[in-house]
Image (tube, each protein chain N blue to C red):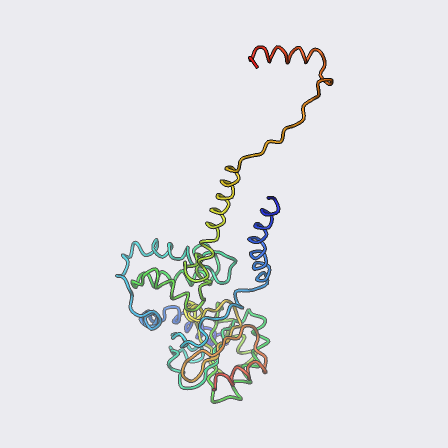
Length: 171
Length: 171
């Protein structure tokens, strides 16, 4: 039993280092040749992080794979790094994941088809609201005269004050 | 005017709320796989019983049942018997298990206790799982003899589901 477990562990360890050429061949069979030149080794990590921050972790709740601690996200990040290092463009990396998970995997849905609603609806609501406010501001307000106190209701002191005001203001 | 504002507000908010409510219970796993009807993505993995590197191409020419599973997954225990019997009863179809996020010792223990009638492959870097858009386990892909994915079954397979999906893969 121990020997069998050891053998299985060795097999698994060998699997971890499974030929990168075969993996590269699998990428190429799915995506075709890389569209860009391979990114300089010191830039791979930052370039890959930028792409990973736009890919949704499929086993999490609305989290980018760059921010998820899940094992699946770690594996996806590793694949993004491999693809970037091999010279695949950002759009090719997106299409690699989109091919298997659909558009759901993109945190920013691309502006096409019904997705336009996501981009245009907030702008439409904003413009519509601004127009509504502008129209309301332009509409002349009808001032309803408020009935003032009748002469008999004004006491002598107030009447004298009002008289002074009228005199002073020349009315 | 207030009624107009209320009407416009409701006309915008009601469809959005309705859309959100209708999709509240949807899980990512239930999103239809974009791979249905397309060529199965190539993969390179290690056969855990022989230690040999295998590729999808090694199995083409026969209908293929590709089951992603793990020893920590309770529904995988439920469906294991169905798959083992299915593989034994359908020698014209290839059955393959691809291990998802698991330890070799645990896989060995699982297979020792429950037996198997088909190979299990190691996918330590998750390339096959990502290429097939796996969200969790168990998920089973049915591939016809031309290499086209005819269906993806999410959850534990029961004999009736296995039978109907096999029939589709054999057509």
